[in-house]
Length: 314
Image (cartoon, rainbow, N blue to C red; front, side, top):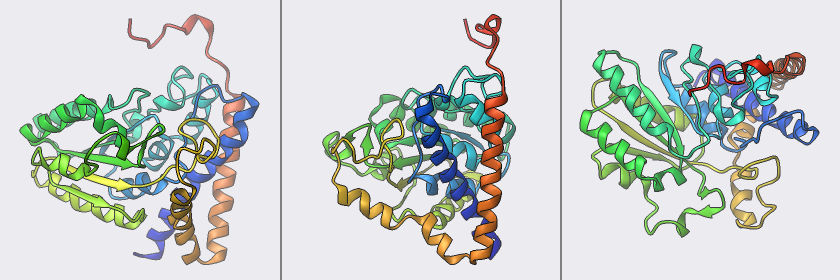
């Protein structure tokens, strides 16, 4: 990996982390009008995968979507304004944190309802194949989404039609507060994908670079017409399922489990490999950008009352 590539990965990881830390700081003030599902601890998945994408590739995400939105190039000003419920937000302040979208960079949207973007991504991939385009579709979902019937229906259809879609399971081990081991007798998600004859790979380390490389390998197969691929990435959320609290507050998970993930935080590892001066320059740039985004959100007006039903399907 070149020094420039390393800096790019670190900037993206640090930027996401600091944006969400500022969200935590602001949240008690009630200026943020939306529930938030934070990505802190899971940034390496979105950053690693998006580092392997072409600009034209399409992504669909989950309600824990800040990291994906930012890693794909989504507009930070629009994201912050959306969290504030302001009209300059990515959905004009009507959708909040769980429904981020930026069509200009191929960020097709996130959803508050578990697993709903999986069939949407498969439908998009079908359209791409019918148009004979080389674009790939990447859909992110948590381990909890694999409990839903639509997950299995989508994998089956994608395999049947040999669609250009990469299924990405962000396996943080919990569906809200229910550990995977309490929800299913077999926790091997790759075997689930392989049962539909979809090649599957698993990255256990949490390494941004390993995730990037595994993604690149899968995308090469997709672009060569080899059909859907499946990638499981082990990870851990450091904060509560929803909101700014620490994830250990409710005592549903062992402290040492979370401590192990924090100790091998990939952002900190990459930071330690960068020259101090360059790292500080990145920090200053990011802090300035975040301050501008917060100021933009606070200055933006709320949507006018008369537009409450605009852009709403009725």
